[in-house]
Amino acid sequence: MTIKKAIKMLDAFIEYKSKAREVYSELCHQWYTNPNGLYRIAKQLENLNGSERELLVRLKEQIMTKCRHPKKMRDIGPDGKAYCVACNQDL
Image: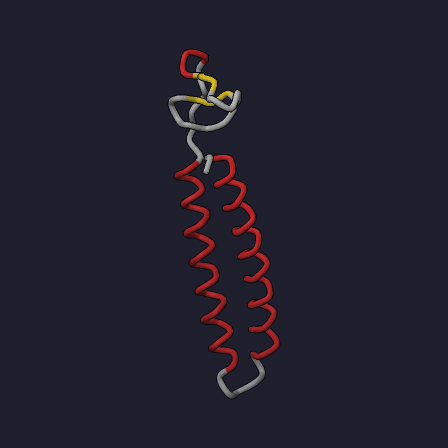
């Protein structure tokens, strides 16, 4: 798997987690008036989702390098696509 594909997959999963957090927040708001504990369950789900999302964001920051892809570090793979030898990212 190339870094470009991994970054796209992380972006999609982060977006999914962001939408899920909004749903959990809405559930918390709706269940707040219900005294039987549903609010606490929804709040825990929201916190768990937020933690997972933060982990994914930090993972993406680690994968995405700040390499400027200098010309002397560029090469062409067997499939004919250019990539950076320093960070292994497709160009």
